[in-house]
Image (cartoon, rainbow, N blue to C red; front, side, top):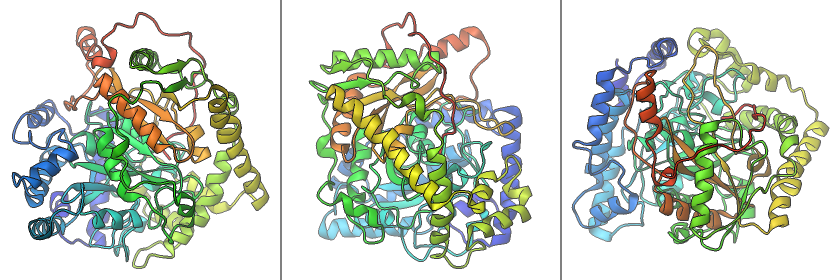
Length: 591
């Protein structure tokens, strides 16, 4: 059975999946050796042509415009689902072969048809009525799709019920189109992993330049939204997994305050840092998804703190003039200096923010920035939580091989050719060994809050009376390297991750044809402010451009120079130099 048929929603057994998993690993290996893998010049050309062909009505089309077309009876939800399914067949499976979609919902067409009938008879439920979305493969759906976090050890019977966020999307009228590929176990498996690879799904590619990495772990969510394979998507983040894929794939990512959205029914790393949030091509699209995800959930006790602090409509905070009068602090120490190209775009971003009427405090460095680069407290928290939280989650599942973390490790050892062809599982083994005591954990948890929040983000925001902090989200995408793993240089996510605070990442410019992003970071439950600021930045820069599915960055100097000068309005002013460089911050990302 071909994977195309599997993705069409046909049923298949465990043996067929394991067989296909081996084939996917072989394909990924070719990608690691020749850079572009199966992608060819002809395939890239066909992908680029699709952007200008029959898909014009869905490519880069906003949720608001899609909803308007359905309201005016120019488009039905059923037709919209068909358009996205066709595009997935041509762009994700064929053409440039992004490989971002793990599986499709066999009931998507019938759900869309029922929603069309409901619209005709009773009207729309809201702004997401009939809108197709893709969910990261670690989010449970109580239907015929699997919920595996990319691991073959979790493949088998579907989950018994929807994750709370999935249920809320359904209640809002969204069509869950399918699941997206991810870094297996949200990239909490190996210190030498390659972002975007899973045993179930193989390697996801970056739609801008196919041999480049999409970042992890919500790689498929970021790539699929960028390539217009859905209207919007859901990802998860523990430290970087929403914002880094958003940056490298040129989309908006909202990493919410921990507890603003429920994690019930999501394969976990740590209840202390895990959060679920949207990817969209615009701030308004991401905000539209965020609003339906919020609210107290008895299945996730940490959502109780969001009572009275959440909104059901975050699009009300979208403001084209949102930067005017805002006080923005620039984080430089350890958050710049790791990439000349990133720094150049960041300087242009700061100039654009000033020109839009914001008051820029530069620098506004975190007092704890240097300490954060070496402190082990976050690792202690994640390793301690992972075994306990994963075992608790697995206890809710039946009909899958793994009921405990120890079972997962044993399964991977028994199926090493399919699950460990490129990297091992030393993080899983470390967590299973339970190396930290409760006292170690409690001390590390307090240390994280101190470094990230009290003496970190809170301290600098209090010092300068700031509305938000900004930093480059990450470097341009690196070539996917299944031999040596990720080549991560730096990122913005760490302080907010350990503090449990939100980030809104927005497209900010390009370097050599690759997207770069800007992170707006704030205190707990400051999503309204961050959305206002990010939408103001989006309006004045117009930085997002649709991907062109280039096969690889050309080695020819003239061609590379042409790619480097492809820049949005945010970077039209020529940057003649970069600030003095500081030592790069090197630590794992993609959790």
